[in-house]
Image 1 (cartoon, helix red, strand yellow):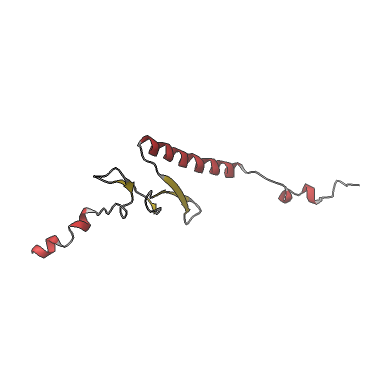
Image 2: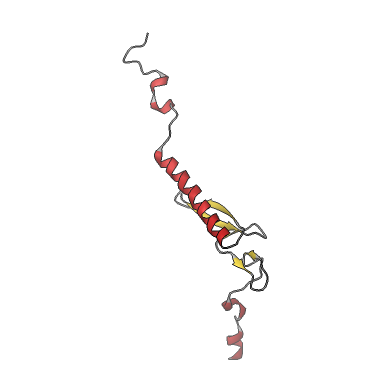
Length: 108
């Protein structure tokens, strides 16, 4: 017989299945963020996938996946002459500072 003072395994909260509102909210927000980004990219006519990485303080960062090389990137570019999207490395793009570096120093 079970007494009122008996705390058997089935009455201990730690042994029960639990669902936390904060955990559900976090998962819903993560899914919503990625879905919104995908919708915006589709509206711009860009077919791109996304990935995530963990941050130092248990957060999450969302990245583009380069359609050409699969690298995680923060910025995706459309090639100025071709109708392709990718990262700077795949599209062989340089910043203006990189392109003209050394030209001013050599003319002095």
